[in-house]
Image 1 (tube, one colour):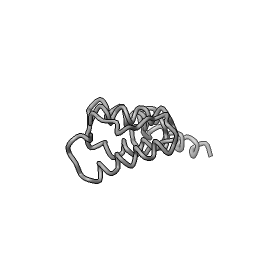
Image 2 (image 1 turned 135 degrees about the horizontal axis):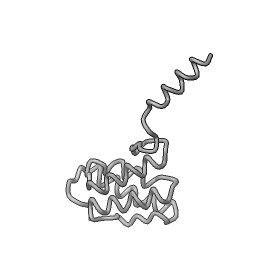
Image 3 (image 1 turned 30 degrees about the horizontal axis):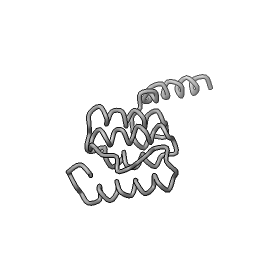
Image 4 (image 1 turned 90 degrees about the horizontal axis):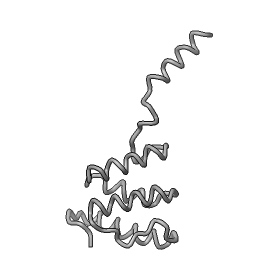
Length: 109
């Protein structure tokens, strides 16, 4: 019985550190914020699609960081305001999605 507990605790300590996880789709909000910050620091255009998706987050801080990162990468906000009512945010997200779907490499605007 003791060996099972020791083995289990040893296995969990070898897992990735959740305090350092990075991922747009991670369940951990901190990991998602780290992914957004990393995209901002590197101005990673391949992160545009997941950043647009983060604009629909329930977390206003995540939405704010995502739109500022999109603005840094593209130079545009498409009229998105992270604190606007849901219907206004949805309209701006549609503008972002339409632009992205068009396959434009040029910044929106």
